[in-house]
Image 1 (tube, one colour):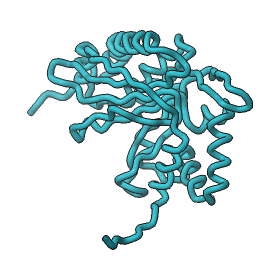
Image 2 (image 1 turned 90 degrees about the vertical axis):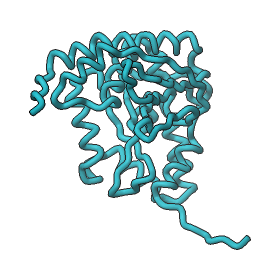
Image 3 (image 1 turned 90 degrees about the horizontal axis):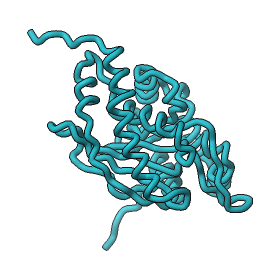
Image 4 (image 1 turned 135 degrees about the horizontal axis):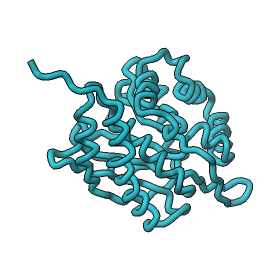
Length: 251
């Protein structure tokens, strides 16, 4: 059957490079019970997105769990490399670049910022001119380079601990729940990925946690998710309640 040859767009080339460099991950699922958090968020006139909330909560959990800030590196010999702070990579779509391809925005040390600041950072990444969003701009500039040079840069970035934290983060977060689906199997460059569903009427949310099994085992992953649920319903809910303006009454 005769077909048509199509060029690979810049953003699709980036995704291909990401998949080639991605790490093997396994996944666990937890039904998060978030009644207090959902109630606190609903009380806000302006509500932070769920990615914002989960980024900050997971960064708080990672302060006490150094394995969540640890990479497995292959160069110059197999070893672990721990970094002092969490760095999130948020999957987002920018219509001005490619409405069908996700890009990843870097958000550093979210546990040290307010939810409003984290939300503003994500909003800036979605709407600001590309040259004002360094993590996305840098990734696209590298993707324009010839293949052999890209391969060399990716290999260095994935195996030099400091560069890996700067360019690929310590965890990623994504969701396509608004389209009625979940990401069940995934590959990313960081040691872990959070994907999540919609909050149901009973205030539960399905959360999938993908992690690099070479670094730690399922017992730690289960502990992390239990602690994450606790932080969401206490620290994050408290911040929402303390800073939230009352919602205007219905007309």
